[in-house]
Image (cartoon, rainbow, N blue to C red; front, side):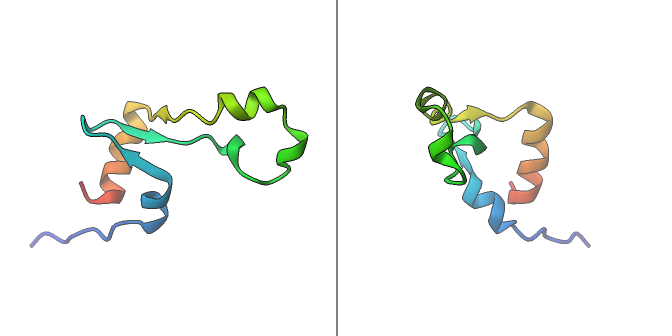
Length: 66
């Protein structure tokens, strides 16, 4: 008998899946903690989502139950 994995709600909030199946993440530098001390160019640069590596993508899919 196989058991279903519960989806990790924290992962759902941090990860977006594209229409083609890529797993995208946002950068932690965008977070509001001490944001005014970070350079504006760094904040803009990290506003663009980045693709998750293949090894991490496999673990994330398990956590999402995909």
